[in-house]
Image (tube, rainbow, N blue to C red; front, side, top):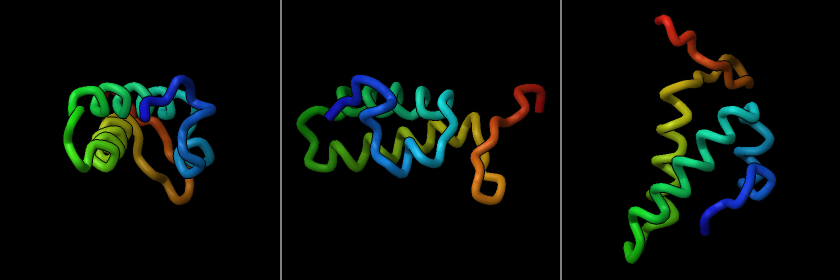
Length: 72
């Protein structure tokens, strides 16, 4: 099911990612969820795509997610 706002995201996403990364996750999930309508694994696919989207801009540093330097 699409997420209306970041407060509706799953606990692991809300508690681990900074707000901007949550925005990326939510937007990617919602787009992927719509794009894969009718597929049996729709939810799983959308979560995988959302995490991949986050990992394009953030990297895990220990227990924290930090934004990648856009110049590198």
